[in-house]
Amino acid sequence: MTFDAAVVRKDFPIFETETRGKRLVYLDSANTSQKPRQVLDRITQFYETENANVHRAVYELSEKATAAYEGARAACARFIGAPAPRSVVFTRGTTESINLIRFTWARQNVREGDEILITEMEHHSNLIPWQLFVQETGSILRHLPIDDDGRLRTDLLEEYVTEKTKLVSLSLMSNVLGTINPVRTIADAAHAVGAKVLVDAAQAAPHLRFDVNDLDADFLAYSSHKMCGPTGAGVLWGREELLEEMPPFHGGGEMIREVWADRATWNEIPYKFEAGTPNLAQAVGMGAAVDYLEGLGMEAVREHELELTRYALERLESIGATIYGPRELHDRGGVVSFNVEGVHPHDMSTIVDQEGVCIRAGHHCAQPLMRRLGVPATARASFYIYNTPEDVDVLIEAVEKSKGWFA
Ligand code: C6P
Image (spheres, rainbow, N blue to C red):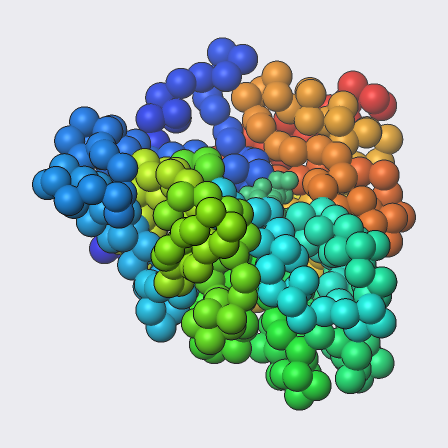
């Protein structure tokens, strides 16, 4: 079956609604994606026919709930080529997954004077946890620079990845520049000095087919809500031998094996990291989102987004917009940050909203990157499976209108 965004769009009930009395042109999927009926129905079905707590009871209904929850884990593992479902920990999302590593693996393995390397393009979720960590431990946070095209300076790896480096934590795809980073090259450099690699795949997972083995990652995080799934769910994948050695994150029910008044032993992975009643329906919904995306085919998703991005870049250039990030399509995903002279991105976002167009404006939770680009903010259009060239046309017309306002 060939990919047809107009058909895919019909799976999403939200596109039956209007905004500002206009056809909804949703270009903010990098922020959060819309949800298809297949995912919404799966969540309803869970609550209507399978709802019970998981892993704690032996009655049939609880067994059904557990099967649904663990089925979702298997889907999330398969989606990223994880060798086994037990290496997939359910979290609330990418931010929590990164913080899990901060409070467990990093506390156990990174000491005063050791270095953590991130990059100049990281989202605050992969920056603030490490700022806090180095303040607590006396370790050192370094930032691999980017070049003027928004690509990582891999030519500087020798200088930045040293015997002191214990962790390299970086995004597979930038939420601002769209850059797809050469994670494997960086992982090879990190592993050569014995450092571990944590991949923030929040932006990559919804759009790209990748495999944790090919990336040679040690940990990888992604969020359900950016890939057609519900909020409140996400994944931390880790190499089993690392997860086994790590201390627990939160304490509470389900993460224990045996408990005495003054001490406890821990459950096996991944349950050691899943204290308390998990976000069951959300995890099940995330599994349904994986099934949905796999049904479309991730290669087809990528092809479609390449076409839309090519068209958007062309049209934005034709109206004189400044575009940030690499110009080679194959080095970038469907996230286009831009500015138009004389129009503040916030004003632009407000004006295009009048035409039914949702774009994000601001620093995109990447303030150090904004400083590097020399701008306080950008406008950002981000594309997904339900967007069409017509959406790009409406955006361009609306941006032109905003230019008119300030002329
Ligand atoms: N970026 C954006 O509009 P959470 O919120 O935990 O699901 O994901 C955080 C996160 C981590 N890394 C990257 C690269 C991200 O883009 C995000 C979320 C959204 O760009 C919301 S700020």
